[in-house]
Amino acid sequence: MNKKAPYKYRLILVKNKIYQETINKYVHYERALNKYDEIIHNNKKNIIFPKEYINMGGNFGGIQELTYEILLVKTNDELVDYSIVENEYKIKEKITTEMNRFIILKKHKIFIEEDFYVFGYNPHNDRKDIKFILKEYVFSDLKNIIDIYRLGNKIIFIKTLNNEEFFNMIITKNKSDGERLFNFLKLNLGKNNKNLIFNEINNRKILNFLYEKAIEHTGWDKQKLKRHNTRP
Image (tube, rainbow, N blue to C red; front, side, top):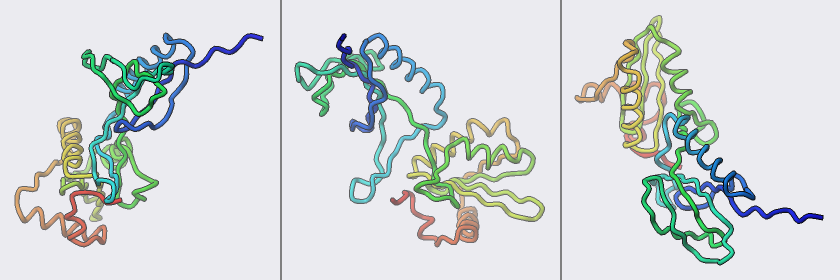
């Protein structure tokens, strides 16, 4: 009976240098490399609004920058703890790793689609991606005026239809993420969707108007609305 060839190569996902999962295992380097290249290619093509921050909680550092990487690794028979790899910028560098069982052959940054806390939905188990936001709050109504504001880390949509006011709010992880989402919407939608009005908060009157509307529709107090970071 022939002995099965060992899985010498693996594709591994890491988040902020911490192991997350093994994507797959391979006997042959060529098959592992082909899959590695395919994942990178599809990732660049398919991700619309990548995740850049993670909320670690108050006891673990709060809001932190986030980096995902895919690693192509080989079983480390020699038990060394580093390798020379060629990264996405074609610069050779020494990579240390806590995974002493493996030698890193290649690595590349990849992106994960952001998911948002949308007011009215559970912030922990019912978060929404950018496709939901575009479908529900933009493309569902291409005729009526929709005012869009950024209030710190919150993106607010307000429209009036048949004398009824509709209010929706997306809460991002921090002020920088809120600015990034607002600019993304403005850049990609502002020119071709004339019913979308992107408003700058440039005076106290507009600011007070937004607080008034947000308090009315959410029941949150002003202090909570002033927070620029989400809480776990």
